[in-house]
Amino acid sequence: MNAHASAPVTITVTGAAGQIGYALLFRIASGAMLGPDVPVKLNLLEIPQAAQAAEGTVLELMDCAFPLVTGLEVFDDPFKAFDGANIAMLVGSRPRGPGMERADLLSANGGIFSVQGKALNAGAADDLKVVVVGNPANTNALIAASHAKDIPASRFTALTRLDHDRALAQLSAKTGTPVSEIKRLTIWGNHSATQYPDISHATVAGRPAIELVDQQWLADEYIPRVAKRGAEIISVRGGSSAASAANAALEHMRSWVQGTSDGDWTSMAVPSDGSYGVPEGLVSSFPVTTANGDYSIVPNLEISEFSRARIDASVAELESERSAVAELGLL
Ligand SMILES: NC(=O)C1=CN([C@@H]2O[C@H](COP(=O)(O)OP(=O)(O)OC[C@H]3O[C@@H](n4cnc5c(N)ncnc54)[C@H](O)[C@@H]3O)[C@@H](O)[C@H]2O)C=CC1
Ligand SMILES: O=C([O-])CC(=O)C(=O)O
Image (cartoon, rainbow, N blue to C red; front, side, top):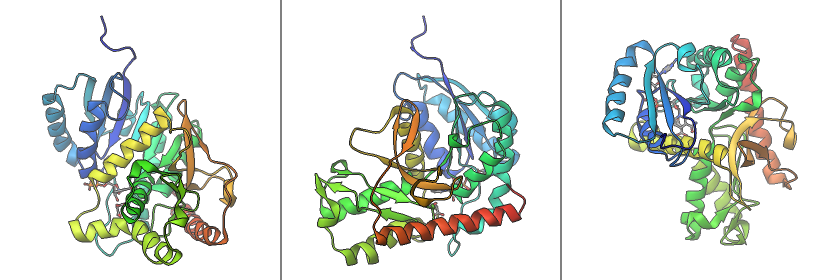
């Protein structure tokens, strides 16, 4: 008799031999993403030069004897790796180094996502869910979606959960309140230094967050700290965030599949439906709730002038990235 109630979910992780891949795969295999009753088949995609290292990770995954793992395979061909994929976690791409902005990676990484969009279109499962982690994540998701004409663009999302979690952690530290007591925080816009971590609708232990902190701290310390945290990690750690990024990617997918809690929301970069004045189609971060495997942008939030200016600035950056990749012929 099959010990598991459900059929295995096929999860393709790209960049499997990289630092995020190494921090992510073991946790997915343990059931931390889809739950303790859901068997998983893991497809690991790498470039040919790194396929052997990914094979080494497979040996280690085997050695964990995870009861939920029903398959483990390494590929260097995206068309094979995405065949039948229910979930695609697009991590594989070059990280930035010190002194670079994420947008500097557009031309280096953009090409990866046009090919992967085509490969997903060719063979992924009908219920496909995609999260793009590789930077610049929002625009890479736009590129992938534009090459997957038969898949609804709404299935292509990008990771701003790490920014969301960083914003929670900083507000928790400032107010001396556990993160579990902080709700309704939002990351708007691009996963870049222009992102806007917004606490105007957030509550801390049931109280409006804006009553607990002063405006100067918010504008001069909190927002830049969260928005530039990636660069801070690179300078202190000597390499870009890995385990925290893997955790955020896992949480992004866990929320999408398992749902957000009542009275709270999370942040995901998703193709805009025109909400909050964000031009349709741009992959921009919004407050979202999730239920039954679908997400919805939280409607009708009041947007102050302070927030409006910041959302607009980040969206303008997304528009310029879209123009840049269109000029590179990547859309
Ligand atoms: N959205 C977010 O919040 C975050 C995004 N990132 C981004 O995630 C990406 C990966 O970061 P790391 O794992 O630290 O980099 P890494 O350099 O350690 O690993 C990247 C892996 O991707 C592989 N790769 C390259 N091209 C590929 C392709 N076409 N198909 C499959 N695999 C491919 C490489 O061989 C390498 O093993 C970077 O672009 C980084 O900037 C990192 C942290 C947070
Ligand atoms: O900053 C980087 O290049 C890596 C990243 O996206 C992050 O840590 O948020």
